[in-house]
Image (tube, rainbow, N blue to C red; front, side, top):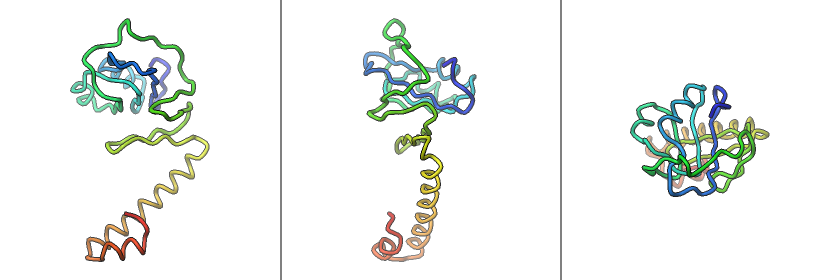
Length: 146
């Protein structure tokens, strides 16, 4: 956590720690103090209400009431990890929201973001057509997005 830089999204691989929460409100405050934008971990968090009040995005496997004190240790940081079955490298872009998480390799981030904006623009046009009464089949044939 101390190594987080402003704008970072932390990614933590917990090696399947299931009996305790690796992340909580105090860690969230520490990350916020370092300027981090959020946290992604393949383990559990706790202090959900306090984290929500902070407005600090934490994406985890779920919640557990027990902390990880004495149950885990930090082995390394700023290195590639496997999180949720996906290999994440330092510098990769993590996009997380209520419907899911995407990890974009840094080498293709610019191209990927450009394509995402193109798709959003196409979806916006499709949405407008649907609201104006166009048939779903027509909109599909025109835009190929739904």
